Length: 247
Image (cartoon, rainbow, N blue to C red; front, side, top):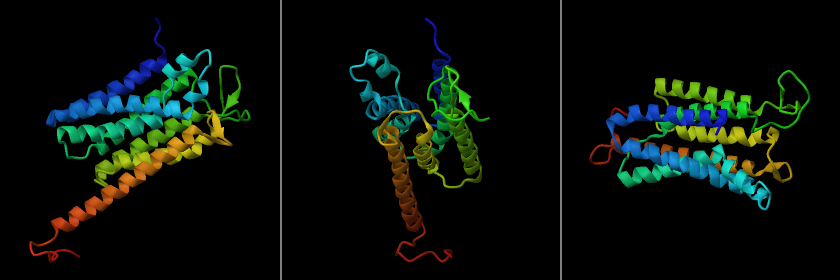
């Protein structure tokens, strides 16, 4: 049995994220359970969103089960991973934020997976003119370089989060920013990806990407409101008057 480069790189992404998270887990063993929940949630969400976005189109097809087994969605992985992490944190009573760490893991893991897509020849862009940027598929048809563009997005995201982390900017919000940014990126980029259209020019992934962006924005706003409330509480005197060192 031959394992494809895509599978190897997918496993490499999981391994890299595990090594990173294992180092973080030295300070609290509950983080191992939280990481496991993230993996389970990511794989579960990836499958569910794929089935809702395009998997149902293969119902009754000769290769239906093969399509069901192979299909998955990064958008669903992000949503499922986030939800399962929050459930796991509540279960073990872990109250600190973990999103800033996942904001570093996600672009690396997704990037490695996309390299696998590039080698495997999947996740193609729409056909286009034979320009310098076009990639040719297995039949030598020029296509929009969907995978390299997404690789570039994740590389830029990683650089941004390393900068934010170094400068201690927007702590606790980095993964929310990734959800917003990646969701909006996919809403726009989906128009030039060769995915099944279910409503005019829109694919099921348009809806999934919009849901990711909105979910990230809602979580970002809630965290900002909570942080502002806690800051106000921490800067009040016992009798409720503001501290004199407030500007």
